[in-house]
Length: 89
Image (cartoon, rainbow, N blue to C red; front, side):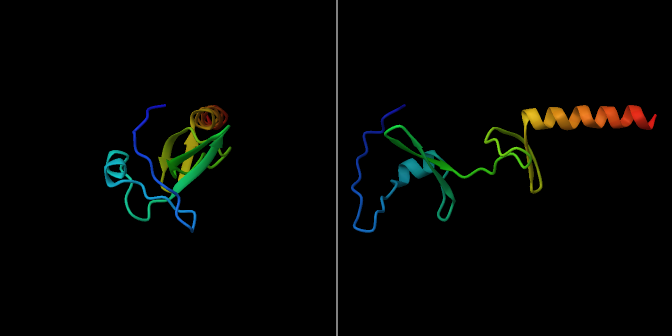
């Protein structure tokens, strides 16, 4: 993990301000949704990216409109498609 050297205090409503330099570097704009994760004693913020529409995995490989697929589900879909083509031939 890379330290930025930036320290911010939590306000009385539980908020922190992400410095503009950090938001620019991470391509975070106003009203962008952020996901909050916990890993041991760490709080991790990440720009929200929808998970796989089939299994929910966060490792999305392909997005087509509102459908996102991870590599495993994309492989399953490809195998299913190949089997369907063979049965139709």
